[in-house]
Image 1 (tube, rainbow, N blue to C red):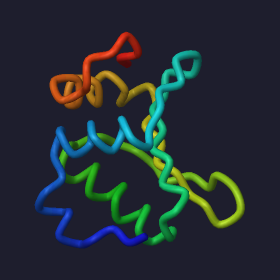
Image 2 (cartoon, rainbow, N blue to C red):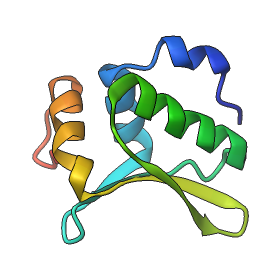
Image 3 (cartoon, rainbow, N blue to C red):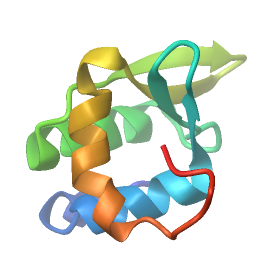
Image 4 (cartoon, helix red, strand yellow):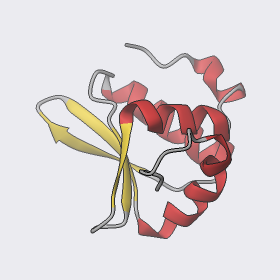
Length: 97
């Protein structure tokens, strides 16, 4: 899979909410959000990470998960900001962040 460069002009809170609902999770005990980008090449994960940081001012980092797979991690310092940005677009569920 490839992250298109033009995503830089389109990624917003709704896009991030959609991404998290499909490929993300919240680890309550560790107060962190992960986006599972395991099917992407490392350079595409880095591009997506940079776009999230630039467009939404959410600090995050790319970490090695296993083999040649990488995920995006938003640590506790950025969980509240991420929630504020995505909650209006999340599907209503009893499992809200």
